[in-house]
Amino acid sequence: MTDKYSPDSLQVFVFEGAPVRGEIVNIRDSWQAILARKDYPTAVKKILGDLVAAGVLLCGTLKFNGSMIIQAQGNGAIRLLVLECNEHLVIRATAKLNDDIDLSSLADDANLSDLINPDGMGRLVITLDPADRQPGQTPYQGIVALSDNGEPVKSVAEAITLYMRDSEQLETRLWLASDEESCGGLLLQRLPNMGGQLNMDDAVAAEGWTRLQTLSDTVSNSELLNLEPKVLMKRLYLDESVHHGVRSFDERPIQFGCRCSRLKVADMLKMLGEEEVNSILIEKDAVETNCDFCGQVYIFDAVDCKQIFASTTIVDAVKQPPKSKH
Ligand SMILES: [Zn+2]
Image 1 (tube, rainbow, N blue to C red):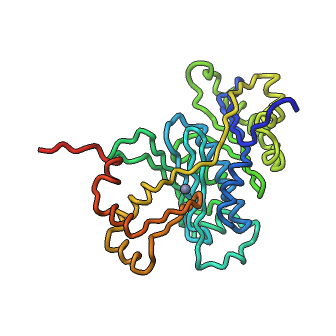
Image 2: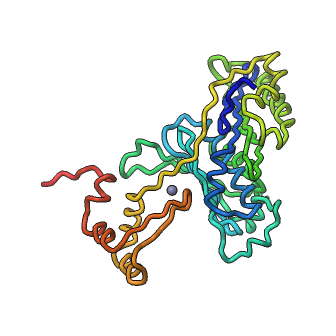
Image 3: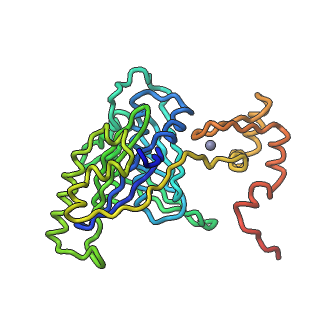
């Protein structure tokens, strides 16, 4: 092997013979960083791994500076799944489990519907929070139910496909795989057939979309889990690149990273209110909280807490523009 293999990377490519873009992702180190922070049952790991791969693929399709947050919410053993990814492909993810359910009874191959959506009331929420969001500006949010014509959605791939169809009107296909070691995925997205290079006969465009799905359907879980994205791209679309052409972009690295901070926790305590915080301080010496995503522990003792409520500037100053005085 002469190529230096960056284990966590996203490969984006476009097909010359059809208005279709493709992406392949393989995530190993960042996935390990996510798993190291919480002990999840096997079935939960599988679904979370699929969401991590799907989230990076989806983020790769966006021309957007800021954070994309995918949340799957429901009433099952999993209450909430969260994946966050920004324009630099810095990711973090977590699952909140239902404490009332005996998790040891979960089948290892339980699907999304079994785990999060047993009553069909679950939903998928995708939020785009721009990096330059102004105070008072709300982030863009798209929501779809985790059911399709009354049928519960059984996989993360199906959920994202549904979201892209109903919310973005884009035909998208996803192939996902995850295990304890890595997670990987392949995305195909049909682009509008108009303008520039993509201007081709509709029948040719439709035939290309079908052809590329057929080629992609040959991908195995083992390939998604173990191959470097550009190696897999070349393997899957060898015939396509010979006859029509496949144009690939530079591989993009993916990293685990958290956005939590002491300031954000202070802000949260302030929202909680002085009375509530003081009642915690009566029972314990300090307010202690740890980040769901990275496990970082934040401790605020009585003096720290007093400071939070004494000052209007310590937390607010960074969030709101200075107000003019009359
Ligand atoms: Zn954190």
